[in-house]
Length: 351
Image 1 (cartoon, rainbow, N blue to C red):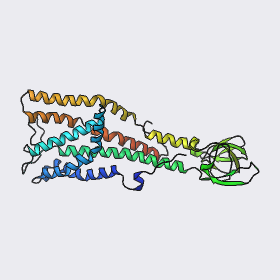
Image 2 (image 1 turned 180 degrees about the vertical axis):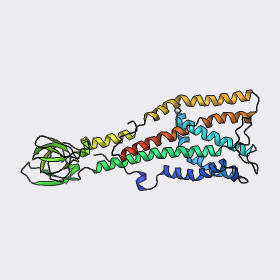
Image 3 (image 1 turned 120 degrees about the horizontal axis):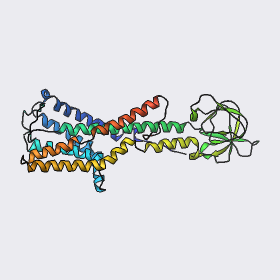
């Protein structure tokens, strides 16, 4: 038999949900303050730092941890770029607040569509660090939710099977013994009365009836079966009494194989996600090289270290793949959810 383990979501709020909710509550004020100059009160930037710091350190910890693991193995993924972008924007904000002019009383952030070179010492990017983290956590949560819903469908599928069965241990003319379906063995004869579920896959040795196979075929009309015809576990006997010889039990049955397919497929990745992982192995080193080249160019141009670092940090922040991290799992969740509404069980993200 296949067991679906109890998940944290079934016993309470899971850690990812908590991480997302806390990050969202802290990030929204930071983003709003940065985007609405009229609401930027005295020392608003220090309030933003207080709110954004837990998001960058604790909220983004899954990305930082994955980036560190990848670094130890000499690999680079989208998590590497996310971690770099978030930490770079946060680190620059700390510099601007403590060593630059961004922390001065009455300092505000306006919006200007002008091309002008500045040293960036008066600019903070806390809303970028907190906002990107929260949006990517939302993407992870949506993906997690999609898999959780598939797990619920899997548990419901396994619940369709019979729980006990009447077996004929002494042959066709012997007495019936009621046993748990897990104790059924290949070769056992068992009885299926009208309205009962077929306990496991087998072959009819006595009787004839109509069996509802909608579990497998989706067809609402029962199929007539007789001696030597095959029947499938969890299908429903609609009319006559049947005696069936078990041919497959436990994990070998058609129902268990269906459940196994769903379970295995949920561990896979969609082509778009696999493509992103492959690209990131090339993309991340290129981005880091571009950031370092940008830093070197502006240092060589003599604009000053602050302006050079501003340009390098900008490259890292802009390259952060926040759209991909949110769009792909959202599209997958909507697709699988809509399919479920229409009665279509999509077995995994590859499909």
